[in-house]
Amino acid sequence: MPLATLADAPRFARDGFTFRPLAVPSRGSAELAVWALELEPGAVSEAHSVDREEVFVVVSGTVAATVAGREATAGPGDAIIVPAHADLRIRNASDQDPARLTVATSVGMRAIVDGAPFTPPWAQ
Image 1 (cartoon, rainbow, N blue to C red):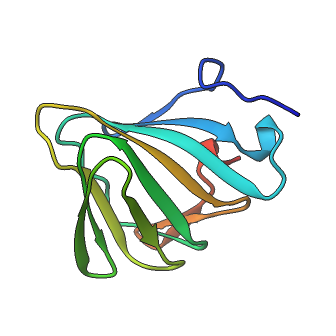
Image 2 (cartoon, helix red, strand yellow):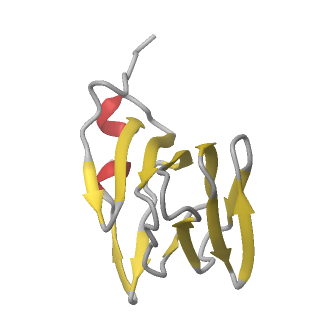
């Protein structure tokens, strides 16, 4: 049984978000992609979509999301489910405390930002 530890996970930072891949192809996963995600206080993502379903599970803090035009706020233990190709914007609902999440999707996921697709390095 392969073990991918958070302590050994590389870090990818983008606009107040830190991604740390756990179960991804480069770390032994063949079908699922899972990473730890930390949002700095007040961090807001750019509007984007992904071509596979994506699930955000809040570990700590409070996260607000707009998914396909619908607003949702999630706390510890809650999941935000984002259908494939849905417009998404996610933010830390606190200006003072970080938020931590676990994110799951399928291997091969591609994101679309401003009409341009790219494969996030934390999902590989």
